[in-house]
Length: 144
Image (tube, rainbow, N blue to C red; front, side):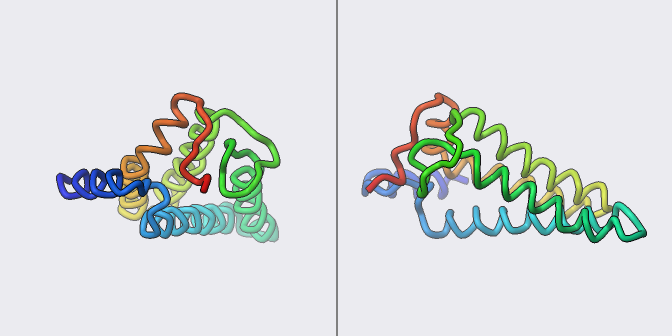
């Protein structure tokens, strides 16, 4: 854990924010995809009839729509609906939390626990973005 904080200081001193680090961005993207897959699998397992097809498509589509529409100021792309950082953080935690819960609900307890730990580490490593969002300030890490 000490090495993570040393790396954060090195990046900070070089003017690189941890949130825009390519490895951290790849982890975030993988978490987002894992969330959508978990929701689709859960929708598929909720029913034994034709409704499972609808749920397997609708649940991840709803999650991706919420993720893409409600964004903070200065996200990489313009926000269709701009919301305060704290609300966005709550939305992200709710969606990742839902993914962890559905993995647990489907019997993938360890997979859910691993995902939860990776999400927590990701937000700790992305301390610059997380802190700004908690203060409801516009995030300037993506602005060139």
